[in-house]
View 1 (cartoon, rainbow, N blue to C red):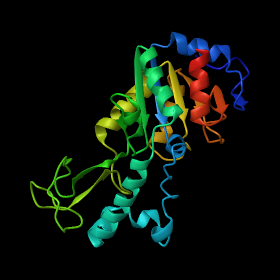
View 2: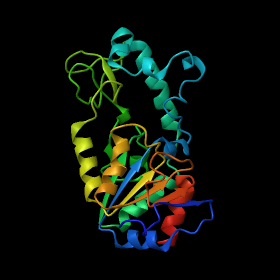
View 3: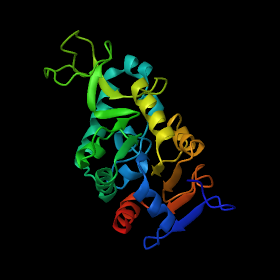
View 4: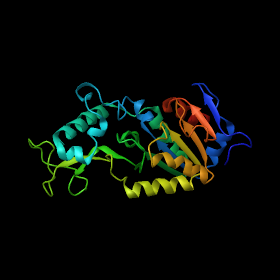
Length: 258
């Protein structure tokens, strides 16, 4: 499913654009569709990006100063409270039409893998099943010492709260700077990128590795790669199709035409 001879990328802009028939046909015939989402789709729900979260009381901190193991060891209360504030922002957000369109697309294709760099859980709240979370989930917590998810704990005056198993401090279940991505998640993401017929890259800058390499893996394995993003990225000139627009506009339109 390579782009037509002599034509590297079709860029289509505007809310009322006509989606190419060859792309629609590829989706109709696809046995396996893989989707990668980034912060752009969450921003449409009002979730601030990682760096946009540095406002108000947090404006004097750099995100990198609050998202490392060292930062947590130096000042666990500060780090916990920053993530607690971000969890409140996420809890106020709702899945948008882009999230809901992906749920519907999953129902329509026989094989579907949704990979996300986002930690807000909005895909699951929209109804997506078995989401591959590359960077964890801010709504979960785990033990800093045991690295195990802790579903419940006893509320005390301690900040952060303590693990009910070992008494260690609890931390958000997200990937911090300097930490490895979950091995199972990245393995599944790479395998899905290499085996799909169509790969959709949605709302991601294609700058943060290793996720940024996934659409290029798909290209190398002859998948039709489609970028959906209001802005150009390093993927734009390589993708057979680059649809300029927000996910909440483009994806419902795509489903309508299917």
